[in-house]
Image 1 (tube, helix red, strand yellow):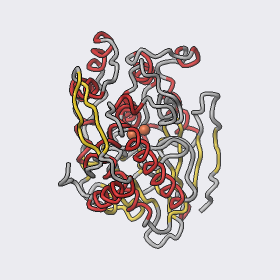
Image 2: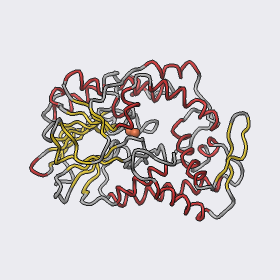
Image 3: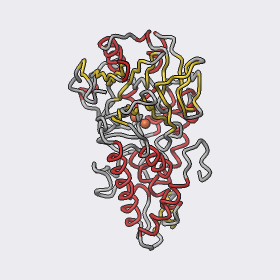
Image 4: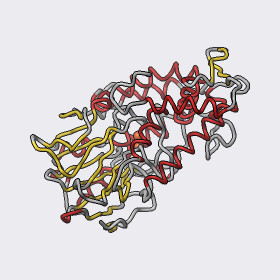
Length: 393
Ligand SMILES: [Fe+2]
Ligand SMILES: [Fe+2]
């Protein structure tokens, strides 16, 4: 396998639009098409993959540019850079169609659409594909609420408001937040995935795409091992579970770290192709980095709570994130990132709820050595079976 791949079309100055192709065993092609999604305020351009199997399989579809502008800038009251504001709302759709054409396909050729996980930046452009093709849609059962329910964004917003208030996060105005309920990008999942194994395809089983359940970034996250069983150089499509240079955001840290340990044991992975950012050439090295990174963030969190702290006080501490978080601006990802570290420390009995004040919760550390607390956290991580039902949740 050629790990470098061949660039068919370069990126624009927005960092998207690129088409890159990899040749796998028996000359089968795997194509990566990069489509617009904002960086810094968002995860950066989304990679879409096309795999030549018995059915032409597309993995993820990206986010429409109009929705990306709304979700990352307008609904959060963030300043939008002029070059993003001036983009056509159909820019990502055009990049996908142009990218497919450059690789020798068109939207109508797609026969199977596989969603790596139920986040907007991965599935919300699917209707563009489904309007032109007769593709069947597959996704893991545990993310079907996010993908299929037209009211999911509104539901998530309503449910998250009290949580953010308890974290001490400043919320955007009610007027802008009501917009979250007004967009419907849902789609029907024709066939949910609920077990690991070779991908089922219309009464036939792929011998080229193997599905791994990799929860922790989202409950129904999947990764795909691409290559025949005896290939010594396989490609892993990691969704948002393995990213570089940004670090994936865990929705449940213990489950995420357990997933990383499972991925670390995979054999014959020559290359990881992620949902955003750069390719990962050394899987074990990236996993080792991510484990160290979260251990350090647990340590910072634990040390900061020597006196009672709210989630938002932790998230806005200097050096907690590479990019300083403005304590006065709504930033849901920064808050939930701090929250998942607090949650694992609480599960390991290293932190406890000290008190609440004006509806905001404050946490305090146990006063033990951090290594003792971390040892208990490691036990919890080890108990997280990568299965559907997490008994500790
Ligand atoms: Fe994601
Ligand atoms: Fe993503």
